[in-house]
Length: 181
Ligand SMILES: [Zn+2]
Image 1 (tube, protein in one colour):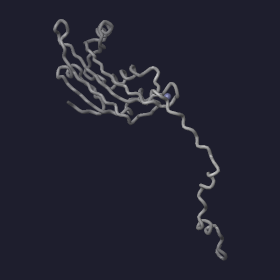
Image 2 (cartoon, rainbow, N blue to C red; image 1 turned 180 degrees about the vertical axis):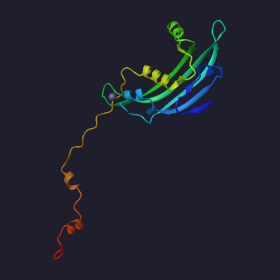
Image 3 (cartoon, rainbow, N blue to C red; image 1 turned 45 degrees about the vertical axis):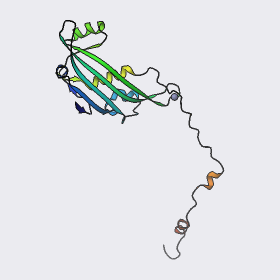
Image 4 (cartoon, protein in one colour; image 1 turned 135 degrees about the vertical axis):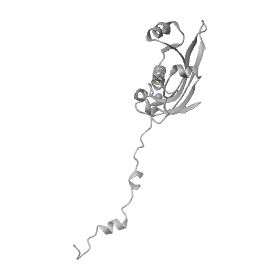
């Protein structure tokens, strides 16, 4: 199993043939479109991803290339009730089948329960991960229980007394020394 941080570009067919497994822990920082959903919050959150290639025979016994993707990340979205940030865990488990051409993918995607994509030698795994997360975001994110709004501390009579008194040295320094100008 290979460890990465950023999801690399992969040769999908090769990944399938080799039953390749890739695992990584990336930062949310690297996903611009997701960060715009979080208003820039959570850039240091870990995005855990893993992918596994597989060759699986179709009904005619011909080998088909599959990728199994799993992603987990916590996204600070905006609560639609109190408008404060709310951490929403997003977990994705998805399988993709790959075909030779765009036309074939379009044709088969509608008729298949799985997503059908086009084979590529430098497939953009990071792009796929971001697309899938964006599609899986909750429409109305909100807290189970919204936190109480923070009340401002009222100023009371003790406030002035708590101010630091000027030190005697500061007072002395302010005095003019006679004869010295
Ligand atoms: Zn809330």
